[in-house]
Length: 397
Ligand SMILES: *Cc1c(COP(=O)(O)O)cnc(C)c1O
Image (cartoon, rainbow, N blue to C red; front, side):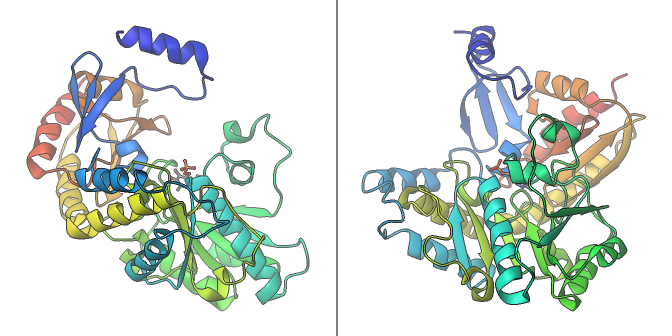
Protein backbone atom coordinates (compact mmCIF):
# COMPACT_ATOMS: atom_id res chain seq x y z
CA UNK A 1 0.00 0.00 0.00
CA UNK A 2 1.17 3.55 -0.59
CA UNK A 3 0.90 6.69 1.52
CA UNK A 4 -2.45 7.75 0.10
CA UNK A 5 -3.97 4.32 0.71
CA UNK A 6 -2.87 4.28 4.34
CA UNK A 7 -4.20 7.78 4.84
CA UNK A 8 -7.49 6.72 3.31
CA UNK A 9 -7.84 3.92 5.87
CA UNK A 10 -7.13 6.27 8.77
CA UNK A 11 -9.60 8.80 7.49
CA UNK A 12 -12.32 6.24 6.80
CA UNK A 13 -12.14 4.14 9.93
CA UNK A 14 -10.90 6.48 12.65
CA UNK A 15 -12.23 9.65 14.18
CA UNK A 16 -10.68 12.81 12.75
CA UNK A 17 -9.38 14.19 16.03
CA UNK A 18 -5.91 14.93 14.62
CA UNK A 19 -4.58 16.63 11.52
CA UNK A 20 -1.24 14.87 10.99
CA UNK A 21 1.35 15.67 8.37
CA UNK A 22 0.89 13.27 5.47
CA UNK A 23 3.78 10.96 6.19
CA UNK A 24 3.19 7.28 7.01
CA UNK A 25 6.00 5.91 9.16
CA UNK A 26 6.77 2.21 9.14
CA UNK A 27 10.03 2.01 11.07
CA UNK A 28 12.41 4.11 13.11
CA UNK A 29 15.82 3.95 14.70
CA UNK A 30 17.39 6.54 16.99
CA UNK A 31 16.67 10.00 15.62
CA UNK A 32 15.58 8.72 12.20
CA UNK A 33 12.18 7.56 10.99
CA UNK A 34 11.33 5.96 7.63
CA UNK A 35 8.09 6.16 5.67
CA UNK A 36 6.32 3.60 3.51
CA UNK A 37 7.72 5.24 0.37
CA UNK A 38 11.30 4.64 1.50
CA UNK A 39 12.00 8.23 2.57
CA UNK A 40 14.02 8.96 5.69
CA UNK A 41 13.44 11.83 8.10
CA UNK A 42 15.11 13.33 11.15
CA UNK A 43 12.49 13.31 13.90
CA UNK A 44 12.39 16.74 15.52
CA UNK A 45 9.25 16.10 17.57
CA UNK A 46 10.12 12.82 19.34
CA UNK A 47 6.44 11.98 19.82
CA UNK A 48 6.01 15.10 21.96
CA UNK A 49 9.22 14.22 23.85
CA UNK A 50 8.21 10.62 24.58
CA UNK A 51 11.12 9.19 22.62
CA UNK A 52 13.87 11.26 24.23
CA UNK A 53 16.03 8.12 24.32
CA UNK A 54 15.66 7.74 20.53
CA UNK A 55 13.34 5.40 18.65
CA UNK A 56 13.55 1.69 19.39
CA UNK A 57 16.43 2.04 21.82
CA UNK A 58 18.08 -1.43 21.92
CA UNK A 59 18.43 -1.50 25.70
CA UNK A 60 14.78 -0.66 26.35
CA UNK A 61 13.74 -3.08 23.62
CA UNK A 62 15.74 -5.86 25.26
CA UNK A 63 14.17 -5.13 28.66
CA UNK A 64 10.71 -5.23 27.09
CA UNK A 65 11.40 -8.48 25.24
CA UNK A 66 12.81 -10.13 28.37
CA UNK A 67 9.92 -9.03 30.53
CA UNK A 68 7.16 -9.92 28.08
CA UNK A 69 8.33 -13.51 28.12
CA UNK A 70 7.98 -13.69 31.90
CA UNK A 71 4.85 -11.80 32.98
CA UNK A 72 3.17 -8.68 31.57
CA UNK A 73 0.22 -7.94 33.82
CA UNK A 74 -0.72 -9.00 37.31
CA UNK A 75 -3.01 -6.06 38.15
CA UNK A 76 -2.47 -4.51 41.53
CA UNK A 77 -4.60 -7.22 43.11
CA UNK A 78 -1.26 -9.03 43.41
CA UNK A 79 2.29 -7.79 43.61
CA UNK A 80 4.92 -8.18 40.92
CA UNK A 81 8.71 -8.18 41.03
CA UNK A 82 9.17 -5.12 38.76
CA UNK A 83 7.07 -2.42 40.38
CA UNK A 84 8.97 -2.23 43.68
CA UNK A 85 12.39 -1.85 42.06
CA UNK A 86 10.90 0.61 39.56
CA UNK A 87 9.46 2.99 42.15
CA UNK A 88 12.60 2.72 44.30
CA UNK A 89 14.86 3.57 41.37
CA UNK A 90 12.55 6.40 40.35
CA UNK A 91 12.57 7.83 43.89
CA UNK A 92 16.36 7.48 44.16
CA UNK A 93 16.79 9.35 40.90
CA UNK A 94 14.32 12.14 41.61
CA UNK A 95 14.69 12.57 45.37
CA UNK A 96 11.05 11.95 46.28
CA UNK A 97 9.89 9.51 48.96
CA UNK A 98 7.13 7.90 46.93
CA UNK A 99 5.93 7.36 43.37
CA UNK A 100 2.49 6.27 42.18
CA UNK A 101 2.69 4.64 38.74
CA UNK A 102 -0.05 5.15 36.17
CA UNK A 103 -0.19 4.87 32.37
CA UNK A 104 -0.97 7.99 30.35
CA UNK A 105 0.06 11.50 31.24
CA UNK A 106 -3.55 12.56 31.67
CA UNK A 107 -3.99 9.84 34.28
CA UNK A 108 -0.97 11.09 36.18
CA UNK A 109 -2.53 14.57 36.12
CA UNK A 110 -5.83 13.20 37.43
CA UNK A 111 -3.93 11.35 40.15
CA UNK A 112 -2.00 14.47 41.16
CA UNK A 113 -5.24 16.46 41.36
CA UNK A 114 -6.81 13.78 43.56
CA UNK A 115 -3.69 13.69 45.76
CA UNK A 116 -3.66 17.49 46.13
CA UNK A 117 -7.38 17.61 46.95
CA UNK A 118 -7.03 14.81 49.47
CA UNK A 119 -4.12 16.62 51.11
CA UNK A 120 -6.29 19.74 51.18
CA UNK A 121 -9.07 17.99 53.09
CA UNK A 122 -6.98 15.72 55.32
CA UNK A 123 -4.00 17.92 56.13
CA UNK A 124 -4.85 21.54 55.35
CA UNK A 125 -8.38 21.18 56.68
CA UNK A 126 -10.33 22.63 53.75
CA UNK A 127 -14.08 22.14 54.06
CA UNK A 128 -15.55 19.19 52.12
CA UNK A 129 -15.78 19.71 48.35
CA UNK A 130 -14.48 23.28 48.54
CA UNK A 131 -10.90 22.69 47.34
CA UNK A 132 -9.60 25.05 44.68
CA UNK A 133 -6.62 24.51 42.42
CA UNK A 134 -4.99 27.43 40.65
CA UNK A 135 -3.85 26.87 37.06
CA UNK A 136 -2.45 29.07 34.29
CA UNK A 137 -3.78 30.31 31.00
CA UNK A 138 -2.36 28.35 28.08
CA UNK A 139 -1.88 25.17 30.11
CA UNK A 140 -2.06 21.68 28.67
CA UNK A 141 -2.68 18.70 30.93
CA UNK A 142 -4.24 16.11 28.64
CA UNK A 143 -7.70 15.39 27.33
CA UNK A 144 -9.69 13.87 30.17
CA UNK A 145 -12.77 15.78 31.25
CA UNK A 146 -11.02 17.19 34.32
CA UNK A 147 -7.89 18.15 32.37
CA UNK A 148 -9.93 20.02 29.76
CA UNK A 149 -12.05 21.61 32.48
CA UNK A 150 -9.17 23.89 33.41
CA UNK A 151 -7.90 24.44 29.87
CA UNK A 152 -8.16 27.94 28.43
CA UNK A 153 -8.51 26.59 24.86
CA UNK A 154 -12.13 26.96 23.83
CA UNK A 155 -11.92 24.07 21.35
CA UNK A 156 -10.71 21.62 23.98
CA UNK A 157 -13.89 22.15 26.00
CA UNK A 158 -16.56 22.98 23.46
CA UNK A 159 -19.37 20.42 23.49
CA UNK A 160 -17.71 18.36 26.23
CA UNK A 161 -19.38 19.84 29.28
CA UNK A 162 -20.47 19.72 32.03
CA UNK A 163 -16.95 20.34 33.23
CA UNK A 164 -15.21 19.66 36.54
CA UNK A 165 -15.40 22.61 38.93
CA UNK A 166 -12.74 23.74 41.39
CA UNK A 167 -10.19 25.46 39.16
CA UNK A 168 -9.14 29.09 39.07
CA UNK A 169 -7.17 30.42 36.09
CA UNK A 170 -4.49 33.10 36.25
CA UNK A 171 -2.03 34.42 33.64
CA UNK A 172 1.14 32.33 33.15
CA UNK A 173 4.37 33.86 34.36
CA UNK A 174 2.76 36.27 36.82
CA UNK A 175 3.68 35.45 40.42
CA UNK A 176 1.67 38.37 41.80
CA UNK A 177 -1.46 37.00 40.18
CA UNK A 178 -0.81 33.73 41.97
CA UNK A 179 -0.54 35.39 45.36
CA UNK A 180 -3.70 37.38 44.69
CA UNK A 181 -5.68 34.29 43.65
CA UNK A 182 -4.94 32.24 46.77
CA UNK A 183 -7.86 31.79 49.17
CA UNK A 184 -8.23 29.61 52.29
CA UNK A 185 -9.69 26.93 49.97
CA UNK A 186 -6.65 26.84 47.69
CA UNK A 187 -4.94 23.47 47.92
CA UNK A 188 -2.52 23.63 44.99
CA UNK A 189 -0.96 25.63 42.21
CA UNK A 190 -0.64 23.33 39.20
CA UNK A 191 1.79 24.54 36.53
CA UNK A 192 4.06 23.50 33.67
CA UNK A 193 7.60 24.86 34.18
CA UNK A 194 7.66 25.54 30.44
CA UNK A 195 4.36 25.35 28.58
CA UNK A 196 4.82 22.78 25.82
CA UNK A 197 1.56 22.58 23.90
CA UNK A 198 1.01 26.25 24.70
CA UNK A 199 3.84 26.99 22.26
CA UNK A 200 7.08 26.37 24.21
CA UNK A 201 6.42 29.31 26.50
CA UNK A 202 9.31 29.97 28.89
CA UNK A 203 8.16 32.00 31.90
CA UNK A 204 10.19 34.97 33.16
CA UNK A 205 13.33 34.10 35.07
CA UNK A 206 12.63 33.66 38.76
CA UNK A 207 8.92 32.92 38.26
CA UNK A 208 9.00 29.31 39.42
CA UNK A 209 11.08 30.16 42.44
CA UNK A 210 8.75 33.00 43.36
CA UNK A 211 5.69 30.78 42.83
CA UNK A 212 7.16 28.02 44.99
CA UNK A 213 7.87 30.56 47.74
CA UNK A 214 4.34 31.95 47.59
CA UNK A 215 2.88 28.44 47.79
CA UNK A 216 5.06 27.57 50.78
CA UNK A 217 4.05 30.77 52.62
CA UNK A 218 0.34 30.13 52.07
CA UNK A 219 0.35 26.38 52.75
CA UNK A 220 -0.53 25.60 49.14
CA UNK A 221 1.03 22.66 47.27
CA UNK A 222 3.34 23.58 44.42
CA UNK A 223 2.55 20.97 41.76
CA UNK A 224 4.42 20.81 38.47
CA UNK A 225 3.49 18.97 35.31
CA UNK A 226 6.79 17.71 33.87
CA UNK A 227 5.20 15.17 31.56
CA UNK A 228 6.76 16.90 28.57
CA UNK A 229 9.58 18.94 30.14
CA UNK A 230 10.84 16.30 32.57
CA UNK A 231 13.54 13.63 32.47
CA UNK A 232 16.16 15.73 30.74
CA UNK A 233 14.23 17.42 27.95
CA UNK A 234 15.17 20.95 29.04
CA UNK A 235 18.76 20.21 30.02
CA UNK A 236 17.94 19.39 33.65
CA UNK A 237 16.27 16.28 35.04
CA UNK A 238 13.32 18.52 35.90
CA UNK A 239 12.83 21.97 34.45
CA UNK A 240 12.27 23.45 37.94
CA UNK A 241 15.91 22.62 38.76
CA UNK A 242 16.95 25.55 36.57
CA UNK A 243 15.63 27.69 39.43
CA UNK A 244 16.63 25.40 42.27
CA UNK A 245 13.03 24.61 43.16
CA UNK A 246 11.67 21.32 44.49
CA UNK A 247 7.90 21.00 43.93
CA UNK A 248 5.62 19.16 46.36
CA UNK A 249 4.15 16.99 43.61
CA UNK A 250 5.48 16.27 40.11
CA UNK A 251 3.76 14.44 37.25
CA UNK A 252 5.90 12.61 34.71
CA UNK A 253 5.11 10.46 31.69
CA UNK A 254 6.12 10.48 28.03
CA UNK A 255 9.91 9.81 28.14
CA UNK A 256 9.47 7.71 31.29
CA UNK A 257 9.11 4.71 28.98
CA UNK A 258 11.16 5.89 26.01
CA UNK A 259 8.17 5.53 23.73
CA UNK A 260 7.70 1.78 24.12
CA UNK A 261 4.70 1.61 26.34
CA UNK A 262 2.56 4.13 28.22
CA UNK A 263 3.99 4.69 31.70
CA UNK A 264 3.40 7.76 33.85
CA UNK A 265 3.82 8.51 37.53
CA UNK A 266 3.16 10.99 40.29
CA UNK A 267 6.07 11.84 42.58
CA UNK A 268 5.69 13.28 46.08
CA UNK A 269 6.68 12.67 49.66
CA UNK A 270 4.88 10.40 52.13
CA UNK A 271 3.01 13.31 53.64
CA UNK A 272 1.02 13.52 50.39
CA UNK A 273 1.07 10.18 48.56
CA UNK A 274 0.91 8.36 51.89
CA UNK A 275 -2.65 9.68 52.25
CA UNK A 276 -4.03 7.21 49.70
CA UNK A 277 -5.59 4.19 51.38
CA UNK A 278 -6.51 0.89 49.71
CA UNK A 279 -9.47 1.50 47.41
CA UNK A 280 -8.98 5.26 47.10
CA UNK A 281 -7.45 5.13 43.64
CA UNK A 282 -6.27 2.61 41.10
CA UNK A 283 -5.64 1.48 37.55
CA UNK A 284 -5.67 -2.01 36.07
CA UNK A 285 -2.46 -1.43 34.14
CA UNK A 286 -0.77 1.06 36.52
CA UNK A 287 2.48 -0.40 37.87
CA UNK A 288 2.28 -3.45 35.62
CA UNK A 289 5.49 -5.47 35.33
CA UNK A 290 5.96 -4.87 31.60
CA UNK A 291 5.62 -1.10 31.93
CA UNK A 292 7.79 -1.08 35.05
CA UNK A 293 10.57 -3.06 33.35
CA UNK A 294 10.42 -0.76 30.33
CA UNK A 295 10.51 2.36 32.50
CA UNK A 296 13.45 1.03 34.54
CA UNK A 297 15.44 0.56 31.33
CA UNK A 298 14.32 3.95 29.98
CA UNK A 299 15.56 5.67 33.16
CA UNK A 300 18.86 3.78 32.98
CA UNK A 301 19.39 5.00 29.43
CA UNK A 302 18.84 8.60 30.53
CA UNK A 303 21.51 8.17 33.21
CA UNK A 304 24.04 6.01 31.33
CA UNK A 305 23.99 8.09 28.16
CA UNK A 306 24.13 11.34 30.09
CA UNK A 307 21.09 12.60 28.22
CA UNK A 308 20.47 15.49 30.60
CA UNK A 309 23.89 17.00 29.88
CA UNK A 310 23.59 16.23 26.16
CA UNK A 311 20.28 18.07 26.11
CA UNK A 312 21.78 21.08 27.86
CA UNK A 313 24.84 21.33 25.64
CA UNK A 314 23.36 20.40 22.28
CA UNK A 315 20.24 22.43 23.05
CA UNK A 316 22.33 25.54 23.65
CA UNK A 317 24.15 24.89 20.37
CA UNK A 318 20.92 24.26 18.40
CA UNK A 319 19.14 27.26 19.88
CA UNK A 320 22.18 29.47 19.28
CA UNK A 321 22.23 28.52 15.61
CA UNK A 322 18.49 29.15 15.27
CA UNK A 323 18.88 32.56 16.91
CA UNK A 324 21.53 33.55 14.37
CA UNK A 325 19.24 32.99 11.38
CA UNK A 326 18.14 36.28 9.94
CA UNK A 327 14.69 35.65 8.56
CA UNK A 328 11.85 38.10 8.26
CA UNK A 329 9.48 35.29 9.29
CA UNK A 330 11.03 34.66 12.71
CA UNK A 331 9.58 36.58 15.63
CA UNK A 332 11.34 34.77 18.47
CA UNK A 333 13.46 31.73 19.29
CA UNK A 334 13.03 30.43 22.84
CA UNK A 335 13.44 27.31 24.93
CA UNK A 336 15.76 25.39 27.18
CA UNK A 337 17.90 22.39 26.32
CA UNK A 338 16.53 20.46 23.35
CA UNK A 339 13.10 21.97 23.87
CA UNK A 340 12.98 24.86 21.46
CA UNK A 341 10.21 26.92 19.93
CA UNK A 342 10.58 29.15 16.91
CA UNK A 343 7.71 31.60 16.77
CA UNK A 344 6.90 32.96 13.34
CA UNK A 345 4.84 35.95 12.30
CA UNK A 346 2.91 33.65 9.97
CA UNK A 347 1.29 30.19 10.23
CA UNK A 348 3.93 27.49 10.68
CA UNK A 349 2.22 24.63 8.84
CA UNK A 350 3.69 25.55 5.44
CA UNK A 351 7.20 25.58 6.94
CA UNK A 352 6.67 22.21 8.62
CA UNK A 353 5.59 20.78 5.26
CA UNK A 354 8.64 22.26 3.57
CA UNK A 355 10.87 20.78 6.28
CA UNK A 356 9.23 17.39 5.75
CA UNK A 357 9.98 17.64 2.04
CA UNK A 358 13.64 18.13 2.99
CA UNK A 359 13.72 15.24 5.47
CA UNK A 360 12.88 16.83 8.83
CA UNK A 361 9.73 16.08 10.80
CA UNK A 362 8.33 18.87 12.97
CA UNK A 363 4.81 19.85 13.85
CA UNK A 364 3.41 23.31 14.27
CA UNK A 365 2.08 24.11 17.70
CA UNK A 366 -0.28 26.95 18.38
CA UNK A 367 -0.44 27.79 14.70
CA UNK A 368 2.66 29.99 14.50
CA UNK A 369 5.27 28.06 16.50
CA UNK A 370 7.60 25.34 15.20
CA UNK A 371 8.77 23.13 18.06
CA UNK A 372 12.19 21.51 17.77
CA UNK A 373 12.47 18.67 20.27
CA UNK A 374 14.57 15.90 18.73
CA UNK A 375 15.53 12.76 20.65
CA UNK A 376 18.20 13.68 23.20
CA UNK A 377 20.57 11.18 21.57
CA UNK A 378 20.90 13.45 18.53
CA UNK A 379 24.48 14.17 17.46
CA UNK A 380 25.96 17.58 16.75
CA UNK A 381 26.54 16.55 13.12
CA UNK A 382 22.84 15.72 12.82
CA UNK A 383 21.90 19.15 14.18
CA UNK A 384 24.23 20.67 11.58
CA UNK A 385 22.52 18.58 8.89
CA UNK A 386 19.14 19.81 10.10
CA UNK A 387 20.26 23.44 10.39
CA UNK A 388 21.22 23.58 6.70
CA UNK A 389 17.68 22.60 5.82
CA UNK A 390 15.97 24.71 8.47
CA UNK A 391 17.86 27.77 7.21
CA UNK A 392 16.70 27.13 3.66
CA UNK A 393 13.12 26.74 4.78
CA UNK A 394 12.79 29.77 7.04
CA UNK A 395 14.40 31.91 4.37
CA UNK A 396 11.65 30.97 1.86
CA UNK A 397 9.26 33.71 0.79
C1 LIG B 1 1.34 15.31 26.88
C2 LIG B 1 1.04 16.01 28.13
C3 LIG B 1 0.05 15.55 29.02
C4 LIG B 1 -0.87 14.40 28.69
O1 LIG B 1 -0.19 13.20 28.47
P1 LIG B 1 -0.95 12.02 27.68
O2 LIG B 1 0.02 10.86 27.81
O3 LIG B 1 -1.13 12.48 26.28
O4 LIG B 1 -2.23 11.79 28.37
C5 LIG B 1 -0.11 16.23 30.20
N1 LIG B 1 0.63 17.31 30.51
C6 LIG B 1 1.58 17.78 29.68
C7 LIG B 1 2.38 18.96 30.08
C8 LIG B 1 1.80 17.17 28.46
O5 LIG B 1 2.70 17.67 27.62
